[in-house]
Amino acid sequence: SVEIMARQPKIAYVMLRNAHFGPRLAASVELCVRDLVLYSRFVRSTLVVCPPVDEPFEGIEIATIPRAPISGNLGKAWGVSRLLRRRGVDLAIVENHLPAAAFVAVTSGARVILHTHAYVKAPSGAFDGGFRGQEMRQLSGLAFVSEFALGRFQADFPGLRPLQRAVPNGLDMQDWSATKPKD
Image 1 (spheres, helix red, strand yellow):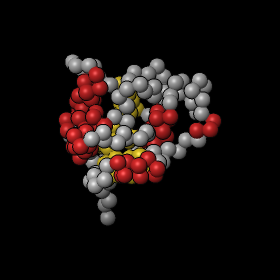
Image 2 (cartoon, rainbow, N blue to C red):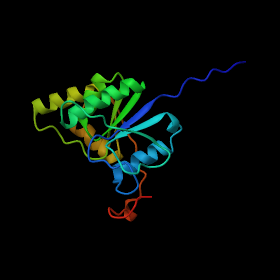
Image 3 (cartoon, helix red, strand yellow):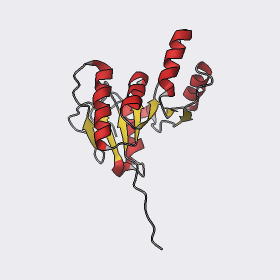
Image 4 (cartoon, rainbow, N blue to C red):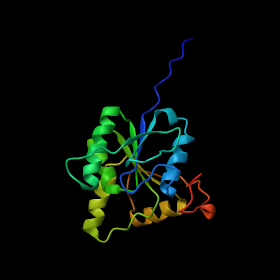
């Protein structure tokens, strides 16, 4: 019998702002993304979209965020959406930025997951809750770095439909230093 292999999904991790995806100045978000990509069975079909970096992590394909005609995070998100469409990305995981994740979901043609490494701020009122709920409904899912963060989110945003999961950060933060190269 002939076995037909389905193609591997094209995946992109997107870090829009203040990211240094390389060993010299990486913070915990970049280290977490590095490990999630490097040890994934989809490493060969995964791209990290990030700001320019002098020396990226080895073994991971990167693309820098394209220049956009308008500035700010939504301008960057527009450039990223165009890049994801050109590359035929199936799934984009956007780090820590809900408005950009929602915008990429609407404009890129890819399914989008918001991966949050911090707490999602509770809505300040009904209007804010409605607006942010609408942004979240554009997403295919939400991933949190801990069960605690997931539980807090579910308490602050009850009844939200997109898939929600904790994907624990595998980093031992006791030995982490902001000044030394990251291993």
